[in-house]
Amino acid sequence: MRKLVFLFFAVLLIISSATDSFSQLNRKSIKKNNKRIASYRGKKGGFGRQNIYSGVGFSVNALNYFGDLAPLPTKFSTDISFTNPGFGISFFHRFGPRYTLQAQYMYGTLKGSDSESANPKDTQNSGYRYERNASFRNRIHELSLVAYFDLFKNEATYISRVKWTPYVYLGIAGFYHNPQALAPAKDLKGNALPQAGQWVDLQPLGTEGQNANLKAGDVNFGIKPYSLLQVAIPFGIGARFRLNEVMDLWGDVGFRYTFTDYLDDVSANYVDLGVFKDPLAQALSYRSNEVKPSDLIPGTVPKSYIGRDGNSYTIIPGFGEEYKDSNRGNKNQNDTYMVTSIRLTYILGATFHKAKFR
Image (tube, rainbow, N blue to C red):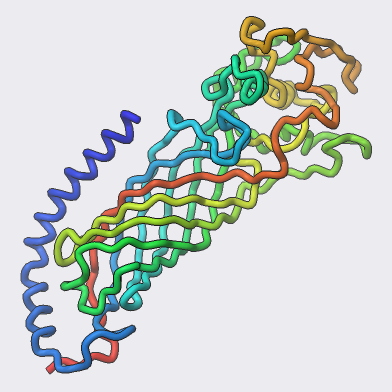
């Protein structure tokens, strides 16, 4: 939250200084445009006439994650303490009294951690998640094309546009993601891991058996590696405020509905720990062994079983073994992330389509 407060005030300072400098820089061009508009004798208003223009923008964003590693097993649960900053650069084109189309590149990070978000004493809702002890970070690179619809019409030119207007938006986005986790100090056999304390990529490890030779009767049989290139649907609401003749301030909050359940590398069931050939993949598939015994749900008693590789594994019941009810995540619900933005835009100029000036 301190990062967000700092970024908020930094944006305000940038806006203040930028507004003054751009106002001085564009004073002459604005006067010229005002003279041209004053001499205009065409029809006022109408789609595709005076109110067509383009611009560029820069945004400071806050990202929040909704998924299997949220504090509670509900669709709308998130951990505000894991809010992470991001930024975006955009180009937009105004098509008429209400419509704007924007292309944007955005970068940001999503994070989640059972040990920091879940309450071990809440045995009904989040105690299971605390015992699971999964965690991740995911750096998102997003390209989007979004249509904005203003609630207040702007029939005039870009110079005399409305002082403010609420809006809604809907679009399409493609993004690259790569979930990572901090490697533990030791593997499940107690041997030191060379990657200890490092952020490691999770998708190549196949922590739910994607790279293992699973049998036809295994609960995750047929599972395939998930793609790091995904599609999302951005949608949300916001408001835009005019700062001067060529600068606007946008503020909006929205969601990205994704078509993947692997932003956090957690979705399906646990598999037999004996199917893993890589000790690192094994250790990152099952992390309940890192939970202190005093933090386990009262009455929890560890158990042992012989894995498919012939080795013995001691686990917490319900975690780390092949069983139909041994859920690692909820595969029936895709992950989502929320983006809250403050955007400063600058109008590059106006194209007066079909308008004639004398």
